[in-house]
Amino acid sequence: MSATITTNLESPIGLLRLTARDGELTGLYMEEHRHAPALLDNLVAESAWFSDIATQLRSYFSGDLTTFDVPMQLVGTTFQCSVWKQLSAIPYGETISYGELARRIGNPNASRAVGLANGRNPISIIVPCHRVIGANGSLTGYGGGMERKSWLLQHELAFPR
Image 1 (cartoon, rainbow, N blue to C red):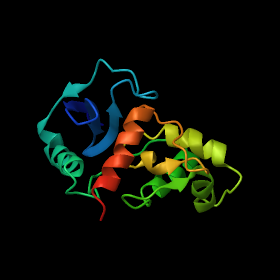
Image 2: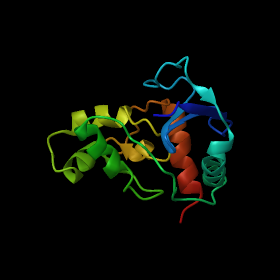
Image 3: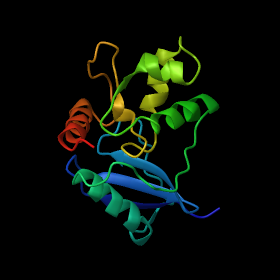
């Protein structure tokens, strides 16, 4: 297994930390991200590998990209991975509730567990956990902070497709 590589990318919502291993993106974290892993001593700084992902993120932030094409490795429990897979199916500019997400994974009574899995999503923005809101339409928790969740949702509404 190869070393985990990392780079930082400036964005309109602050510095983003990206990590990858074995040719796949493993993390996209914001500053002060609630569930970001601690920096490991064995990370290797490497910006070249991330150039395509950085280009896609810049295009997203400029309103020119709505769908990412990134090799990813989502590591979590079977339940978490099922939630993250459904997050990836939420179209750009749309939102769903935690209850709807629970229904989509076939477990309609698991909205609280879905919320916890959503909060542990290791690849923010690309796996769009910001598109999940409360049943009453309110913005609820976000690992990157509520101001960033609000910004991302407003951004997607500003560039409708």
